Amino acid sequence: MKYIILNKPYEVLTQFTDEEGRATLKDFVPVPDIYPVGRLDYDSEGLVLLTDDKALQHRLSDPKFKIEKTYWVQVDGIPTAEALEELRRGVMIKNTKTASAKASLLAEEPLVWERSKPIRFRKDIPTSWVEIKISQGMNRQVRRMTAAVGFPTLRLIRPAIGPLSLGEMQPGEYRELTAEEVDKLKSLTAGSSFGTGSRPKGLGGSPKRPSGAPKSKGGRHYDSRNNSSRRKRSDR
Image 1 (cartoon, rainbow, N blue to C red):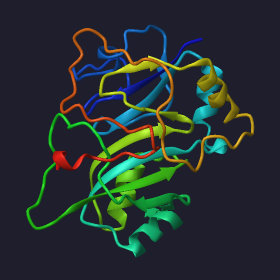
Image 2 (cartoon, rainbow, N blue to C red):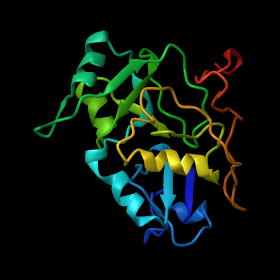
Image 3 (tube, rainbow, N blue to C red):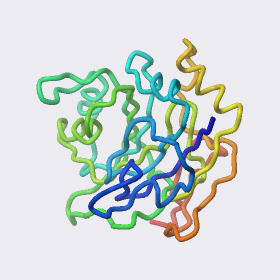
């Protein structure tokens, strides 16, 4: 069985073909007969899990297992305590209330790469970063959640799914999971509580970049040594 994680770049489809000629997983992961577990939007970035283990793929996609996914969300403005509490309790999206979530304002910007297309900045409105953890999988859920409380999403990165984390992987890099990681992943669908409640960490394995894949800019990375992610002050 094959188990791979990819740091999906911005404006890449979470599929292997596209009739419109847009970038797909095939441009970054030259491994045959694997498929993504769940989706990550075209305009979102971060961790995508791919495997040929159909049984595990099905279980991880089953909402009853409540696999926690972590997102770092850059939003327009600075969310109030009330807005964050709304996100935690759940918000209405097209007559459906989202499940309870974990939401917190990050004290500093995450240490992340430059996006291939910069976000729009408005001179008189600051931006901020929020960490949101959910186990649902509604269409464009996180973006719709932040919009519902009045703070539109400008950039969205998924650094972790359960116990799996990007670590210092750059956009377009992929790596195979270690045997330990696979065991931990499988434990999530066997009644284990592993993989919830902690800040994303860097895990084992050496990332690979397929020949011809675009390189990221800036050299920024996740700091896995202290389980946090900070931007150096010289980068501001």
